[in-house]
Image (cartoon, rainbow, N blue to C red):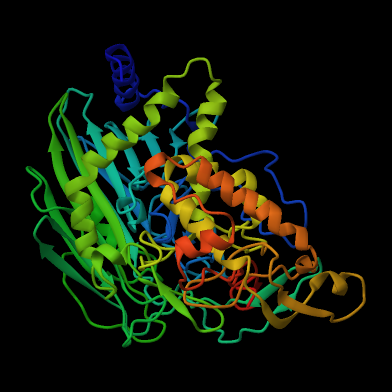
Length: 606
C-alpha cells in the first residue's frame, strides 16, 4: 500500500478507536436498544422470521456462531451445523460497575429482557438485575455498529467513564486455519474523562449450554410443507442440564472458567466445552470467578455483590448438574482508573463442539479439529490461542478491508455491504468439514437459506460464489470438486416430489439422480447420497450438465494461477484429476423454525 493510503487508513482507524465516539467508517449503525417502527417481515407465513434484532455473527466458518443484537443481548445460536436457534439468554451477558467515590451504579449491558415462557429462563428472568437503558431521541445511551467481521458497542450518558467494546472473530481471506476457529474476541476499552478516580468492574456471565445443540428426534422421515418444500423434524435439547459442570481454569496464557458436560465415546453432536477467559497476566486488574450460579432464579446471588462493590462470590464448585438444574459461570475484572487514564481488556469466549450430525445418522468433524483435535476438550486451548494472537488477527482484518474503506469513489453503503454481506458465510448454516486426502482444506457448504436448507444450490452459487472465489479460493474449489464428481453419478433411490403435493396429486416419486445431469446441489460429508431437489423433477433436465460444466470451468478460470487445477475437459477428466472421495452434504439439514417442542425443519433432504 502506498504511504499516503496507509496514512489515511491509520487516520480512519484512530478516529474509530477514539472514545469520543465516531461511527466506524462504512459500518451499519443503530442507536443502542432503539426499535423499529415498521420492521421488515417475511413474505410467507411459513418463512423463518426472528424479527429485526440481530448483529454481525461471531464464530468461524463452519464452527457454529453466536450473535449479539443492537440491544446488547446474545440471541443468535447457530451452533448446530446447518441449524438455527434464536433466543435471548439473559445470563449470557456483560455488565459494568462504577464507583466514583460518592456514587455507585451497575448495569447489565443489554436492554431489559422480556418475559418469555417458551425459553428456559421462564417468566421473570433475573429480576434483581439492573439493565442498561435503551436510547431515545431525547437521551441517547450508546450505539451499535457492524462492519463484518467487526462489531462495536459504545456506551454513553449513563456511566461516568467512557466505555466501548469491539468484538470479532478471525475471518481472514486466504487463511484456512484461523477463519475456522470457534472463538469470539471482545476488546474492551475504558477511559476516565473526569477529575476523580474511578473504580470499575467488568462482569461476564455465561450459561453452560453443552448438550443443547443437537437433534433429539432420531427420525429421518421427510415431511412436506404447504409450499411443497421438504423438511425434517428438529428438536434440539434446549435447556438440558444433566451432567453439566463448570470449573475454574488456570493455564499458560489464560485464566477463566470452562463449562462442559458428559461426553460419550466416540463424542457425539452437541458434546464438548465452552470457555470464558482473560489473559494470564493483567497488571492492576483483580480477577474474581464464580464457577456456578443458578440463572433460573432472580440472579441476586451474583448481582447483589456486583452492584455493591463490583465483586462476585468466588467459588470453584464443579459438581455435576442433575435434571432441571441449570448452571452459569461468572467472572469479574475489577480495577481503578486515575483521571485521564485508559485501560484495554481483552476477553474471549470459545467453544469446542467438534461433531456435526445429520438426520440419517452420519456425521463429520469440523474443520478446526484439524488443528485442535476431535476430543471436544480444547476450548481453553482455543481461547489461549486467541488471547495470544488477536492483535495480529485485528491487523490482518484492517489490511484486508483497507482497499475498500479507502475507495471514496464507491458509495459508503456499497462499501458497507461488501463487508457486511459476508456474514452469511458464517451464519448461513455453514458446514466446513475436516480435511481429507481428496480435499486438503475440507468440504465446504452454505445453505441456500434457512427456509430452504439446501447446500450450495447451483443456481444460487452462480451469483453467490464470488466471495469465496476471490477471498477463499480453495473453499470454492472444494465445492466445484463436489459438483464435478456428481455429474456422472446416478442414484435410482425413489424420492417424493413436493410440487405434486401442492397440486393435490398426492405422492409422486422419481429417481434421485440420473447420470449426466448436474445435481441442483452436491452431497454431505461421510454420505454417498447425492443432493436432490424435492420440489421439482430436475433430473429430467439433462441439459443441466452443460451449465454445470460451464460453472465449474468459470470457477477454474478465475482462480489464481497457483490455485488452479490442471485444466481438464469437464467433467470426465476433471473427475480423474480430482480423484474419488467421500461425498459432500446431501443438502437439507434439520431446519428449525417453530417453538422447540413443536417445530419441524427442512432437515437434510435425506
